[in-house]
Length: 251
Image (tube, rainbow, N blue to C red; front, side, top):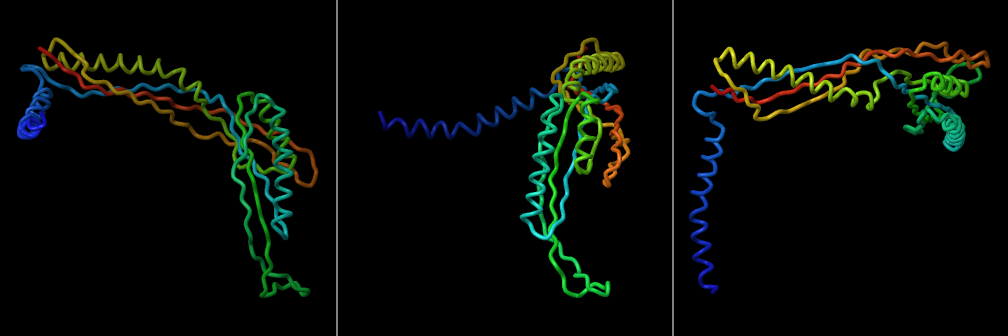
């Protein structure tokens, strides 16, 4: 039986280039529309303006000291305090961000008030706490409490939640497809074709954030004065859907 395997393989190899060429030819011919038909590429877009519904904030705690151990110890304690305050608010999601400690060098002061040429080391460090939530009153109170603990606000703004964005995706797709069908019919009428057939459809959705609303708040008075409450107002986010298609227009 084995003596017949080699000739069979040889015959298969000899036939393969022809078979491959035929496949390529068939694939090419399949792209050519039937006589009297036209393949048209069209796209249509729809968009909606949505009010942002989720608050996000980033607050950092910074420390400067003479040695790394003391700097990190103070940061660790303050972050633990901040996390405890955040986790006590059920409507807010709390997480930690970057933690950095580094060494700077500064001129050593002298008795006459002038800087000495010699330098001394100075350690600095910071860690961030990130917040997400939809209950504005509880969220902003927590931000204010953290500011009162000595945290510095890096960011406080509204954004559009992924849940709200997903809610309108089907609506946008339906609107875009309807517009695409109308455009295809206009093209068919202009070209004297009576039938439209969608060969391929692609959809792409995106959320384009509007201007980020600025935090409106009187910052903490670090000398122990009264702490005013942080404020924020939602903006608008544009959610869009683009549908593109290859359409066969038949006589």
